[in-house]
Length: 300
Image 1 (spheres, one colour):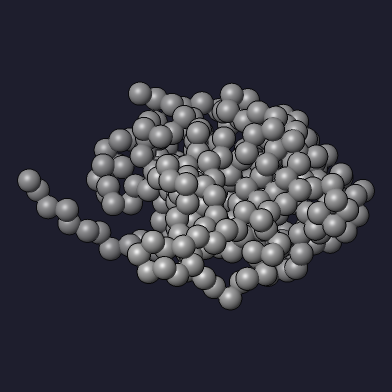
Image 2 (cartoon, rainbow, N blue to C red; image 1 turned 180 degrees about the vertical axis):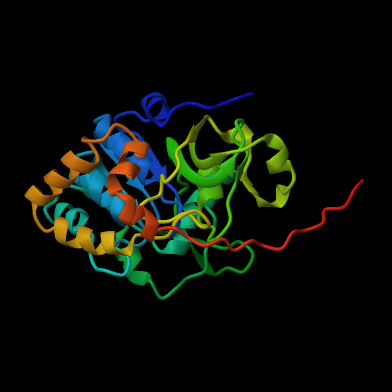
């Protein structure tokens, strides 16, 4: 059964004001195109959850989409602060919850498994317990020692970018694997964006690379270059100059508004955005092929 639809229609159908949205991806495969479409459609009062918010949430907060952010690391990777998120938190205009990376993933794992929590060993990060009342201690009934617990996270919608999937939503990822699987299984709805839509036979030819099964997916959207300015392994490189540029853009509200007006509201979709970047940028982000060795699954 095909689940193919446009990104604009998927956002319109599954992302609503007040929802908890988890945009997955770690370092690469960050679904910027989906974030931009949410901005264009004017969603408000969202709870934005992500292990590493990256520029995507700085832009969505700047556009007035969010009332709260849930994270386990916050910053412009390799550059500095997410200026807008930080300013809004410090001004008291943006609610927030901070976790360690492990506890953030534990929340998703508990949500995916339908459990009230997954216990964790105590760490040196005791300050997080002071800052976040969601951290609790319970007694392990077997050893009698205390363990740390945090509540499950069940987003209303998870948005996951992948290298390829079929029309039913069976999706494959390679390179750095983040929290995509856990977020997808924990969420009530799943929107996939993909660099390529391929035949089912392609997916079945390499089943171990399939991270997300189609039966949990609601919408499949063909969105090449979705992850820019982050990268998609094997398709295009990370746009490091843009991360530096955003640090400067985010210094003033006027510069942020000008960026959003030109690069989000001023384009209708990701294809127009990609073309607007220009030939020089597109050429700079090209990657040379590096093909993995084939595997033999045998015949039975």
